[in-house]
Image 1 (tube, rainbow, N blue to C red):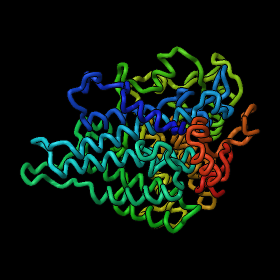
Image 2: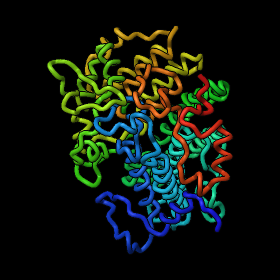
Image 3: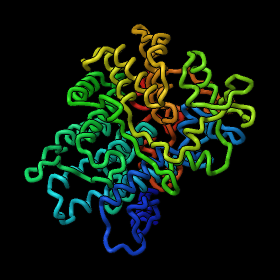
Image 4: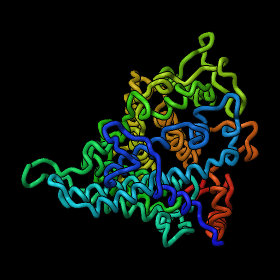
Length: 486
C-alpha cells in the first residue's frame, strides 16, 4: 500500500469536515451550510493563526520557553527541549498547514470563483486575494524559521502531490520576497470612481485591520523588511536591496500601524493565554531567571508590567529548566494572564524599528541612524505597555555602535516579551542575550537552533523527509538554519 503523507491525511480530514471556533457575528450552521463563504474561511484562518502564535499550550507552542521568557514548575520536559514526547512538531505542522494554510488556499479559490455582489468590484476581489496571500507568506516564513526546508510548492495540492517535496529554505525566502513586492504593487487603495470612498477588501471580516488596504500595504513592506534582514549574514546584497526597497515604499511609522488581533472578553474568543494561564486553573509557568535577571540588572521599569508578586520585596524568578515551586516565585502579570481580550500580536512598530536599527548598523540606507531607530524602538515598547520613563531608561542603556548586536539584541529581546517565537528567532540571529543552560536539556546543554521534523513525516513521507534532512545537514535540534551563520 502506498504511503501517504501526514499532510494528505490531515488536509483530507479538513475537507471532509472540520470544527473551528467562531466569532458570534459569523455564526452559521457548519454542518449544513447553504454555501461556503471565502471571507468566512479567511476570518477563521486568521483566528487559527493568531491562536497558534499567542498560546502557550505545551502541545502546540513552547516558544516562550525556548526564548526563556518563562519556565515550568512541575513538568519540565519542554523547558529542557524535549519536543518529541508530546509530538510538538507534528502538532505545529498540522496547525499551520491544515488549520491555516489550507483554509486560506480554499478561501482564495472561493473568492476567485464567486459572483461579485453589488458592493464589490474586481479591484475589491483582488485586494482580498492579496491580503490572504500576505497571511500565507507570514506562515511560510514562520515554518522555514522553525524547521528549515519545508513543503511549499507542492504543500497544498493533495491530489497531485499526496507526498509533497520539501523546498529549499533559501529558495522559499527568495520567492516570499518576490511575492511581497508584487502584493505591495498590486494592492489598490485608490478611491472608488462613483462613491469616492477608498476601495475596500474584507471589511469587518478582517479581524486585524478591518479591511484597511493601506494598512496591509504597510504590513507587506514591513514583512518584507523582516524577512530580508534575516538574510543579512548569508546574502548581504539581497538583504540590503529588499530592506531599502521596503523602507522606501513605506513600513510601519507609528503604533497606529500595529498588526494586532483583538480578542474578545468572553469564551470561546478569548486570548489563548487567558485560557492557558487562568481558566485552566493550572500553575504551570513562572517567569524565568533569564529575562528577570537581565531586566533587573538594567533597572528596567517594564518589570512591573511584565511580572507581579515580589517576595519579601524582591523579584524571585524561576530557575530555567528546573522544577520550580509556583508559591515560591514571582509570577506573570495578571494583565497578560487574566485579561481575556489581551491582543494577539502579529507585528508592531517597535519590532520594525529594531529591524531598521539593525539595517542602519549594517550600513543600509534606511532614512534613520541606528541610534535613532534603536531609541524609537524602545520608546514604542514602553508606549505599548503603557510604561513611562522611556527617555530616562534610554539614557542608562545608550546605543553602542561598537557592540550594536548586543545593544539591539538585548533591547529587542526585552521588548518582544510574550512573543516567544520572534524572540527565539532574534536570539538565533544575533546570539543575544546569553541564555541559561537547562539542567536536563536533551541537547546536552545548548539552546536548539531549530525544531526537528514531525515524526509522522519520517514514516508517511519518508523519501522526501530523508532528502530534506540531508539537504539541511541533518534533522537535529542543533542543525543551524541557512541564515544562521554565526
